[in-house]
Image (cartoon, rainbow, N blue to C red; front, side, top):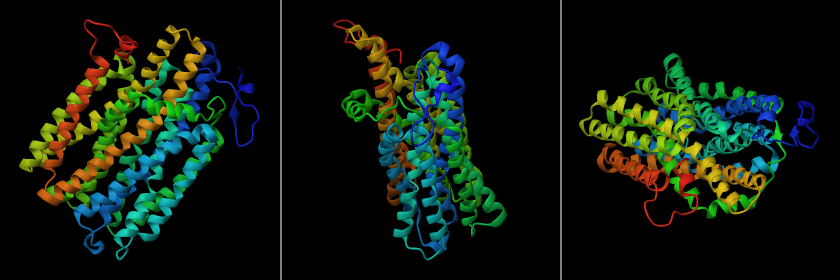
Length: 457
């Protein structure tokens, strides 16, 4: 397929009719350049989406006593976007196949104008808490951008490059969290905590730029046909739910801690909004930058192995944070909490590498059972694309759980220590699950189909 034939007419945008990234000759001649161009502008749109999704993690820093919202209320406020963002990820995943990756990226970027304009309208003392909750819920649309972007980019890249591509796509998107926190820090530093609308004024034109770039430079893949059968199939697949649990532990931790970090610093360690803003961005920034490394390590050593040791490290970091929280030692708390962000970022990359690897292993079982290689490969691509959306949706609920845990912890104990202790138990479950399902090799008895292959994902 040449560049000229890559885009054939079809209403609604630029459509590529044939796409086979596993063909090495095609990939080197045409596919790599097209895939990387789409990856670049997918990252831009997803980056802005993450910034808007995490908007209220910085808006609460501007909400002083005049807003009459206590710490527990603020934790509940930042939890609302994670809840909505989790639910919209399923339809956003399906929308890529229905409307085309390029077309949906344009539309989903423009939808971000709604929560941004709404926040600009209500962000002042005297607004009711219910109104704040409704507007915060709108920012959940930004969380949906991740699922559609990852599903789209998954289809562009060959299996041997998925860990790197998905890690870079997600990492570039994740970095939208610390970037908006840095913007908030600049606004608070230069204009004071009474001017939250300046943050929103910066992001409104950026939303339009992201949509315009997607319209001008991205493509739709015609082979990504809307397939509700794949969605129904992954819902019946046990590995979808096992990986969702692991993704709750990695990405759920990243997004939950990103939203809560500033509030914990204010509520437990008495930091002012400016002092909190000076620290809040560090963890999400490092966690975002290191996510592609998690994908690269998974490409080299296997996603399951990296994921296992990563959850062990997260448990160790949580142990330090729990101790520091009980002792109210900010000097110990900060390195431990920032370590959690770093390990969550690595885990995000390694777990997402595992998803296509699992379905590729199951495709090999289908080939061994007599199915054609092309049909099995197509099945693997459809199933892994659908699974990415479902797992991303369930994983995002981890952010909700984390903020609700903090809310309850501060309500009952006036400290985050009980919440951190519960997170320690959750990470222990995650590394035990990873070892039991994806690393432990059967000993004796009958080896089940796919077991050796799954041990290599």
